[in-house]
Length: 65
Image (cartoon, rainbow, N blue to C red; front, side, top):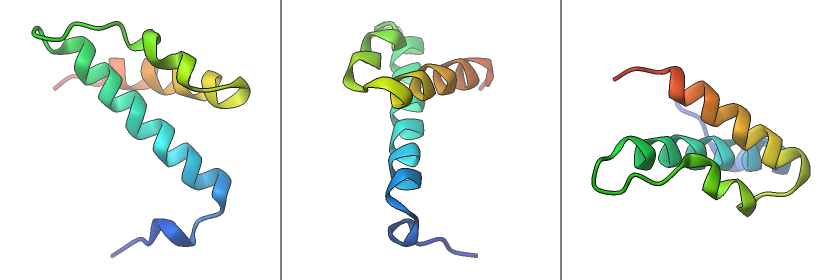
């Protein structure tokens, strides 16, 4: 099964990008060489997307590798 993200509505594409950014922010937070708080990147987003970013950060923090 394949998905073409370009066919998604613009809002859904933005959400996918925010989810990727949240996952990367949590990865950086867990990486002992980087150790940057994930919330520090929340300023890159405004309004609803900022809240969604923080929600996704909490989601990815719960995932254990």
